[in-house]
Image (cartoon, rainbow, N blue to C red; front, side, top):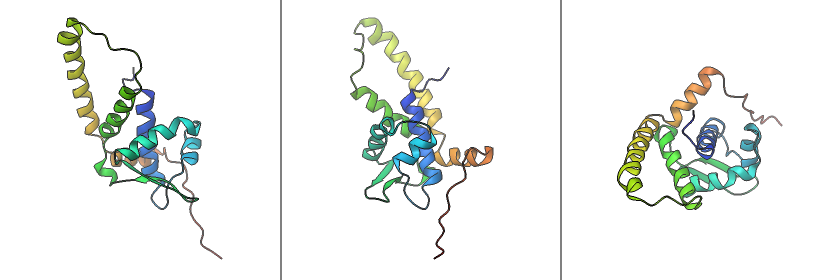
Length: 149
């Protein structure tokens, strides 16, 4: 059972992908979507939220795309999930139940569990994920630039 939402999983994958493939030039949303077999429209809101929160930088233009806004060892999975959690709260999905049971028992228990879960994710940096991806061979061959004229 995965406790992360699909958006959270996608956001962590996107940031890790950008860390792996965006070392020499920004990663386009189109290339990112193709590597993960997703339509780009699913990625754009997540990428923009990550830009607004200072995890990614968005670069415009024909060679634009996304790159990390700070060192990959300074970005944790918990940082990324918090951004997505804020997005989901803003979506205004289902109404939250209002009762003494929820306020006094269920909400505190869920908050405690969520805090512990996020603390575990805070122990995992994007750098850790990149090293593991390289170790297990989960990285596709990166395109290399050829400057021969």
